[in-house]
Image (cartoon, rainbow, N blue to C red):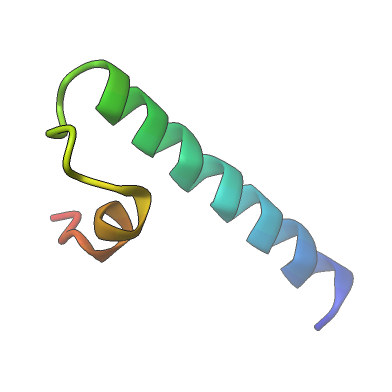
Amino acid sequence: MDLFQKKYSKYLNAHLNLLYFVGYYSGIFDEEVGFENFLKMDFQ
């Protein structure tokens, strides 16, 4: 794994966590939806 892939992985992880945070606290997701279930969702 080169440096670009490591930075991309960190960016993607931060982006997904931010999307989950916003969705959870704005009420888009039910309280039962955890981060693992969020990752399994169909994003279309």
